[in-house]
Length: 392
Image (tube, rainbow, N blue to C red; front, side):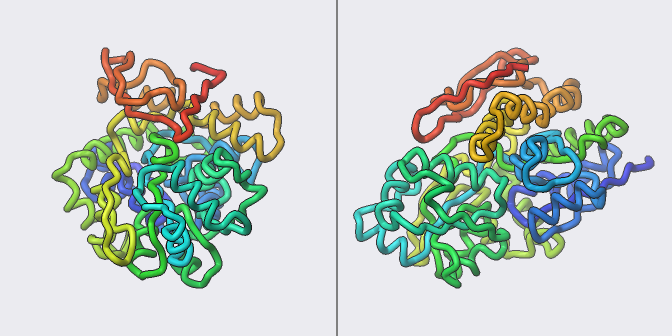
């Protein structure tokens, strides 16, 4: 069978796993695709390589296609998201000095309570807090902005947000360039292993079901490549389903650890897949259920309500008209193509393309094309509920 060749860019993070598994386990070939995965060092480089056609698709931060639709960040070609590659998976960490100050202030580092952790962080360093994030248009930045602003430290006005490539986050912390970070695994655990940082919270403690990475493509690439796009969605959906099986973890870490991908010891990748973390160099451990989701709760579905939430957050900071920004943002998450791709494969596709975000305080059965679908808890830490303006 002749295979359609696709070049796909990625950043060495655990949440690139569905693409790596699809390529390594033969799932892409079963869909008639030959995936060539090309590693990039920074999100800006990867975005530009996608915009300029150096790669066909990319493992991408979920806010980047939305930002491109709003004309933010200097991106070239408009981008769309075919599917969500991963939900959650970020970790917030602090320097050893800041961790010591927080402990002296009485914080217990329970790795769960975002309100208590944020309050302790602000009390320990009320002014001049420097936080590293991998890219200005990222869920890392959005979580930090939302979290600190809700706790009375308006961000970004009162916080120094600095862009640091994920593999260099440990170095920035060690050099004293930042006091804290929000980054995807394994780069948070890397700072603990190196003895320079302590982990404070999983990102899921702020928003329980935040879309983290997407498969991004150029908007003008989709029309002539719709069949290829649908096959790519199916290959990564099958990879995500495989990753969700507990028995897949050992092989998954071995695949990801290869030099062509993350080039790290499997032990360093295991926390993100198991949800069991060593939070400091002394060896204290914490459990974070649902730390990184690839499949459960319709994790891959590109909800237009999630895109609108991102768009309104970006528009508020950039002082853009909120309604037009919301409409532009919604258009970038292609739930229509996702539904077409999986209509003959998955039985649990949502029947709607938007939902209230933050309203599910526990796993909830909702209407689906197959009859019944369980969506996961998606609450914000402060109990707010986001109601999107569009439903389809």
